[in-house]
Image (cartoon, rainbow, N blue to C red):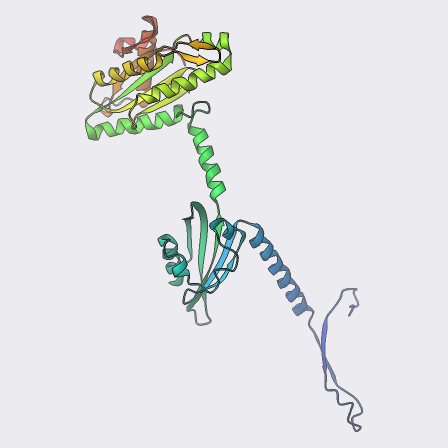
Length: 339
């Protein structure tokens, strides 16, 4: 029925129709305005439609289980990613389905004990952010649980990729200056417990600019990648090789006894770089000048200072004819270059 103001109103009528009785001269009609109820029903239908659209379109799983752990709801697009079909799990025991997932079972048990639980779990190599909520009866007792699991695997992958880019050189994939500084700082802290030293080898490829100028930047990049690979090939797994930029590399050696151990690594690096590198139709021989500096936490100097010492020693190796290494001595500090 259209209301006086132009809006529609809904009415529900009932009557005691006794028209078959000749003695009845009329009927009584009771009319109730049910507009609000109809509007609520329509809103509920729209909400259900929206919820179903979200559940079937987004990478989520919506689930519920009764007090015995029997699954009563299992919907969502993300079910496909773990090899399940919507609704297939209904009627099964959540304890049996997740028998091999102890983290999930622990979260389920906590929810059944009355807790609101938020946790990230791994299922089939995928990461899900999950939330479990207890359902309660009128007397407040837990009658079941309901939960939502959101597939965040792609987001996690992107986060890791961004983090990797922030701390690694884009060309060689090696740690960059920031990650090197962090590792060097931690390495120096550990020397206090171990009574050993940390060695830093600062490398600069000799005459690298000539390769760039004569063969082009692509050839130069190829040479840098090959040099990075060769340097890493002669190190221990716990050592770090980083690229600072250009043709400068740094090797961080942890847990060394003294200079002899560090210079032995410098010699291995020089030998690894000796074989010519094929760059297109050209073969290029690459050498490096290396500065070696040792330190420990007892000196009380910041990590950058040790890096600067190795840089100064490398500069002296350049002065002495390149293709070799020099151990740092305090008198070399005036040789530090502005970087």
